[in-house]
Amino acid sequence: MSENAAHADHHHVNYIKIWKILLVLLVISVAGPFLEIQVVTLITAFGIAIVKAYLVAKNFMHLNLEPRYAVYLLLTMLMFVFLFFAATAPDVMKHEGQNWVKPRIEVVEAPVHH
Amino acid sequence: MRPIANTRSEAGIPTGRLAVWWVVASEIVIFGGLLASYVMYRLGNPEWAGHAAHTNVWLGATNTFVLLTSSLSAVLAHQAAVAGDGKKAAKLLYFTCLGAVAFLCIKGFEWTTEIQAGYTITSNTFWSFYYTAAGLHALHVIAGAIIMLIVAETAKRNEELHRVELIGIYWHFVDIVWIFLFPLLYIAK
Image 1 (cartoon, rainbow over the protein chains, first blue to last red):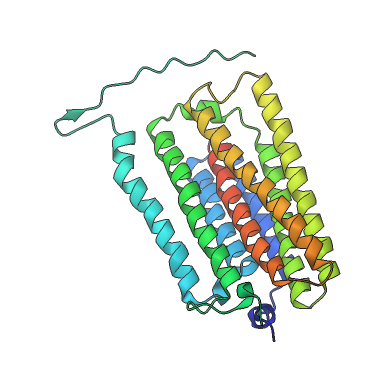
Image 2 (cartoon, rainbow over the protein chains, first blue to last red):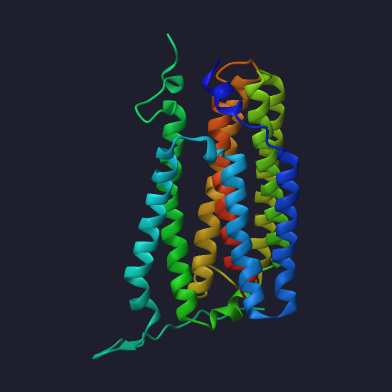
């Protein structure tokens, strides 16, 4: 048996069903902002994005069938991204703190032609 | 002698697939860094919501539909390759490429409209992020489509069928990146 067959033999995923679920989630994420409630928009936009990414990674990329090595590899990279965010976000997002003030940079915006 | 890409590595994964996982891992840092930068600037500049209001959510949603559908055809191509049906796998890969072309056409129309309205990459930092993130993603779509055409050419001769899964993994990752770009650039207003 080839590696491909061995990899695919362990599961019988109904791909069409997963695709339909992804489309329903897409509709919900587009409809969410129409309620004009910020918390709902955040959940329907980013919460659903995480669920959609999980469904694609698990069922289409078959990440659940790979040896742990692959999962740990990807999680390590995600950890680096979060580390980068945690280390630089306060400097970007805050304009002042204890005993420091960030000088405001004046940005000249290009005119917009309508 | 078996091809190197089909030989199991020390990690217990065939080397071809292991290489693709490393490509995906490096892409996570590239797109992750870009999107993390966008998020921190966006949170630090609430007025960007006004700029984001000019992006077209319907075109973004249509492109999400196109990519999700192309991901389905890519995984069905993998299923056909596992069954040893190279011709069917090739057909499904061509359909996936069609999805890539549709995605790029919609993006091209969208960008043309936005540029004509005066929103260019130099307009302000929001639009710089918008064109950089969506542009980098579009380059990955183009690269994926080209590789997929090459893989389909060999697959229809029932050769190197393991490659169908490899390009599929990459394509699903490109789909996942768009799944996050869509709410960040289109929905969060």
